[in-house]
Every structure is written in structure tokens, then in C-alpha cells.
Length: 353
Image 1 (cartoon, rainbow, N blue to C red):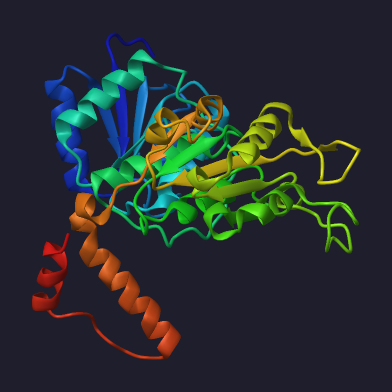
Image 2: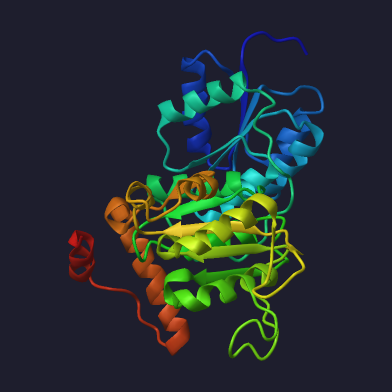
């Protein structure tokens, strides 16, 4: 089939969404076709392939994620934009893992959607991601606010990597939840996830906690101890509040990140490990670097990628769905049947800083 100009195909069981996108694409001089079901699109792709595909996630019959994986197998260079009203981490990560170019939660801005279509067309073939199946079970991270959607996108992009990530945010923003999500959606998901709050361990014990020790290495070392790095071998080590780490341990940590090996305290044989390190802090590490309390070279080593988590003040629109989630959670735990909170209570919650 011969055609000229840019083409975008839309798959969505919602007729109103198809209509809006068709009109917008036409106004943007982009040729379009729309389909109610994924199966109908696959039939059409026997004879033609668009420049960009836009698909919903939840549809009758084949889901958008299943369609994504099928199309990615047959046409790995085809950029696919996933749209969904169900804006949670599972959908975001599954979309990226299936090969999505971008993830767009409903309700979306139509101008933003058109810009994504053009961007996808310009980078045709460069939006593919690891097509491994996404693990299930991280539905506890909830958020429809744009700031949380950006976090979901980042997890989707970073989950297939082994690079070090610095996770920043105030206490209570969910840094360990995000670290677990990065692990559980990664190729290391069936290996250990080991978490350690470095500020909760006395400075004189932290070295042994991280690297272990041999029997007799110091007074009281009555047996060999396996440290957190060895426990996490093959998996992920999450170090929380790293800004409180003593200077001499910062040096040891830098060497492990650079070389992937270390010595137990009192040991003579180097221990080689394959560990992805995720780091979190709620202090300003840049200030600690300027004050010479944190090594500058270690700072740049752990901040390969920085993932900033929004506090609740930046995502107030998520408070009602978080309240519903918590009520449902405690209903299950306490065997209760509480319908929810009153509008007055919700408004009180919405105005807190």
C-alpha cells in the first residue's frame, strides 16, 4: 500500500477517545486509522504498518500490553504510545517493558498527545525497551498526579538497567518503595533485595554490617559474618540515609562501586560481587560535599541517575485515592467495612502541608 505523509493508528474501545484523537490527528495533518479492538488492528497490519501506534491498556479481548508485546516482536522499530485511565506503576512499567515509546495517562492534554506522536515519528525505531515480562505485585505505589507519573516513567526506563540510582525525597515519600519497585521490575527480581538504613547502625558497626568480618577479626568476632554486599550478590542493595556514612567507609564504598570487590574485615581474600546499588537520602548531599563531609568522587559515582520523589504537597490530587487505598487496606487488616471518610475530613487532609 503506497502512502505519503505521517500515519498514526489508534486502538481504544472508547469511541469518544477514538473520535477526539482522529480529529486532533487530522488537524495536525497526520493520516489516521482507528480500531475498537487490538485484534482488528493486527489484521490490518498484515497489509500495512503505521509510523506510530497509539493504544489503550484495558480493552475487551487482547489487552494493550499484550498487543504491545505482539507488535514489538513483529515490528521492533515501531514506536508505540500507551494511553490509559489506570495510571499506576504496574501499567507504566509493563508498558515500557513491552516496548512502549511513551506512556500517557488519561485524561491527557491533546496538544501533548500530538507532540508525542510527532516525537515518536521523528525517533522511529529508537523507543524500544526490554520486552521481558513485567513482574506483578507493586500496586502499593499509587499516583495520578503528573509528578508521580514522571516517577513511574523513570522506573519503567531504569528497571532494565544495573546503573546506580540516587533516590531523593523527604521522609515518608516512599524511597524504599521506589527502590523495591526498581528491583522487582528488573532482571534481578528473583535475586535478593537487601535494604540497610546506614544512619540506624552505630558507626563502629557499620563496616562489618556492610562488608562482613572473619572470625577473630576483632574482639567479640566469634564467627565469620557475611555482610550486606554478599547477601545482595546478584540482586540489589538499597542504602538509605547515606549522607551519615563515616568518611573511611565512604572510601571503601567507592572502591566497591568502582571494582565490584572488597575484603571482609580481617580477610585476606577479595570478595567479588555483582550488586546493583540504590542509594537514598533526605539530606542535601551537595551541601555535605561542599562542607567536605561527603566525598565528591563518591557523590558523582552514586548520582549516575537521580530520581526525585515528590512530597504530598506536590501531589495533592492523589490524597483522595491514597485515602481510599488506606481505608481498603485497614478494612482487610481489621475485618471492617468502612465506606470511606467524610467530605469534611477529606478537605481537612487536602489543605495540610
